[in-house]
Length: 381
Ligand code: PLP
Image 1 (cartoon, rainbow, N blue to C red):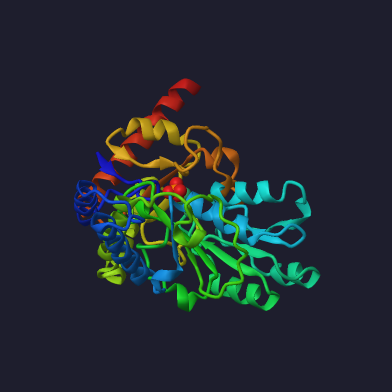
Image 2 (image 1 turned 90 degrees about the vertical axis):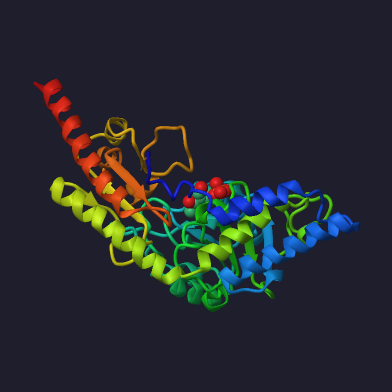
């Protein structure tokens, strides 16, 4: 099977796998005072530095969580205060959108959803108006969209939030380890990430909190006071060490790697669009993650196409909210019809993708779309 679902989860990097296995063979709670415990704490510190180096922050600005879902929940629950605006967008991951809806359920006027253009870019112009009426609050915008790969104009959002005295959070789950990001330079207050998107293990992630950010101390989990009281519970030592190893591996040659992946993605789009002339690529093409191609095949249901090419592991929209066959809220917000949203396939590639897999996938897509179209034509006749 050729794997084209890196945005759902990336294959674990060999460095991360080796680090996890080694860590799981050692005993030690990072909070214990004896030698095995101190050894675990020492290795957690080293991993915290590896992750900090990837992000361009200091290790003390990182809180380990179970992933980006928890990091997003923690960030918004700490940053939001009823009566002040919570500004986000309709194309966010459910971990942000559902948290925002839950937090503002009693005060729906606090929730502000910015408009989205047909190319997937969130329109930041209304921010002036929002903050002219009420200052403060929190702005939460994803750095890169998981379905289309479209990159937000985060710097503009950061500037507007700063001027209005609002906190700024970004769900950077899809960009970390795929494109170079320097959080200190970006100047956000809060940033969420998940290790398995960049070749680390599943079930571990982090929330970056800028030193000095005026964030009320509102942890989600209280108990043993780990992570400076921000996230109680025995540290996931093996997961953290695996994430650190993946961060270090991802950081190596990141810029060149992104170019190599973008070239493969462009080749895939070119082969598919020339083989199936009426298909359309979604999302602003000059402001996207390198490894994502979201393609609509009008009139051809994506689930049928995916079933017709079982050796290609791609997905319909996102897998993050798996199970329910609802049309993509991201594509609908960009103005696609329900039928077109249901005829869209997301191919996401990454560090282990090969040129041969690109050629293979393009052939498979052409064959599958042709086959499904023939079946539909026969049913119509
Ligand atoms: N945010 C974005 C943009 C994602 O793509 C994902 C993917 O699942 C998440 C958050 C949630 O990450 P996790 O499931 O690892 O908590």
